[in-house]
Length: 209
Image (cartoon, rainbow, N blue to C red; front, side, top):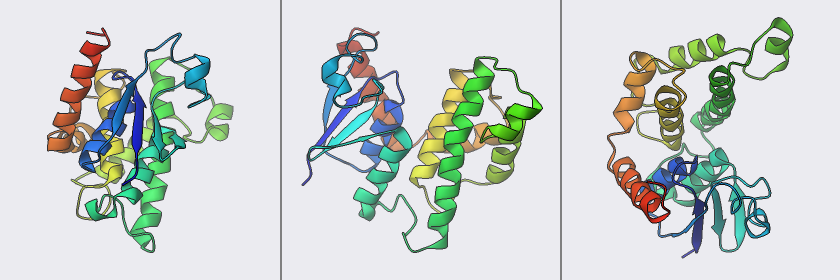
């Protein structure tokens, strides 16, 4: 059995990794990291030179970047069937929308920080503009319970976490409609509820609540 160490702050993107670890029923050790001085310390920068949370250490190998960690875990636990088969066309579709979701996060961020758009920026930046990103994602998820195939995958997890952040933290997305309906179907999952409870406990232990 591989040794998994999870470096996280409960108010970071580590929330999605915690959810995924619980979906996988993984055994893991948690190392809490405070924002600020600790996250920028020489010790933690040796784990993640970006000084960001989360990070995952598996048998001494470090993996950072939330989408990469989630995809790695889906492959690490194939019996959970949280990612399409590697030789399937659905796997290609999965990669398309997972990488799109990474672009979408920054569309949400730019909207949150009121970064102005213009024609040159729309041409240059991967997501184009906020409205196009939202329309593309809405059209893709309209009438769907699952983003890919007929069962829950790590793509549903990543998208649901991102949409919840966009609605309730950044407040750049409507709390009703196609995107909200899709997200609400997945945050009732047992693993999500458990992960929320574990992060709440960790926040208390770290003096964040």
